[in-house]
Amino acid sequence: MTKVITYGTFDLFHEGHYRLLQRAKELGDYLIVGVTTEGYDQNRGKLNVIDSLMTRVENVRKTGFADEIVIEESPGQKFRDIKKHHIDIFTVGSDWTGHFDYLNDYCKVVYLERTKDISSTMLRTQNKHIQRIGIIGTGRIAERFIPEVTLVSGISAQGVYNPNRESSIRFAENWNLNSYTVIEDFFAAVDAVYIASPHETHYGYIKMSLEHGKHVLCEKPMVLRKTEAEELFQYAKDRNLVLFEGIKTAYSPGFSKLMGIACSGLIGNIRNVEACFTKLENPENRELKDLKFGGSFTELGSYSILPIIKIFGTEYEDIRFESIKDENGLDIFTKAYFKYGNGIGTATCGLGVKSEGHLIISGTKGYIKVDPPWWKTTYFEVHYEDPNDIEKYSDRFLGDGLRYEINDFLSMINGVSETEFKLTPKDSIAIAGIMENFLWGRNKTN
Image (tube, rainbow, N blue to C red):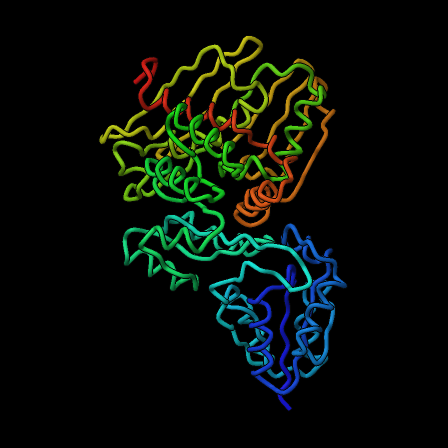
């Protein structure tokens, strides 16, 4: 008898789950299905699990494919279950290709092709909806999006659009998605859109997506002009659609904790914020080749601006830029100076100059120092006049962090507005205005 085992959360049970279990059953004579607990899902970074463990187990049982159901509660259990149950074949979806190759030493490992077209209708007994999200763009950030979206329950990557046929097909085949080069076909297949295309194309793709009734999650900077941001947010509001800017730091638990501590009065009245984000970029990459919209500030400025406007607000009195430029005219290092009535802020970013990625928040009673990389906030300290008086805080930042913005985007679609404060339309409009000021403003220092 050939014994097969597979595992999953099986939240919001849908056609993709059904097909996976069906194909797993076809691999052998006896199928064991492991269903994860809520606690284990949280520990491994799975967000937004909706159904209870009992509901998820019952949904698996109802398929009739499982000869036995076990509960997965901890890391390492897969190996123990394989040995305990004398498993011949371990199988999971192709989203995990390569991840469990180490189990080949104990049994055969089979990765089953994922279901491309997730049905928008959930179990017949439930009136729940999985958001089918399509991706516009096939670059590096889009590559990081796919693994992260699989870790948020209630949303599924459906397909990818790129007007370049070869790029679209290559990306789709790599991630087992549907490929689209006709944008009308793309919109017909999705409920929501993730835009990860070059900066200057964001406005057009956002407008088109909203016109087709799609919710939009757009990579930073969302747009490069203030009036465009204002227009798009109003357009989305008038049509009851969600428009979300993807600055992952804003939605991470560590940064939310940091903002709470900073604004609690613990360090008194905040008077200065200094944020720095630099990296040494490959000179052949788009960021340092796009002479019109490339450079360090358009690429990284949104991150360094974020803590300044979250603490001091969007109504600054003055802004000034100082840049070091490469031979092609693009900025490889920029400092933006913000002047407020009650404080000052400095946003530093660079693609060709390396500096410590620090974040310092200074107040009248003390200061907060955030360890680099602060934009992936995991640890920070509160310091006071007494050098021995230090308070320490920590939190997790899982994976690439995109799962946090995806989770909050989904929450907004589902009518949970409590997450909106993390990055408001007003914040995004202000960032667009700052980008516009940098690219075309009169007060930029060369």
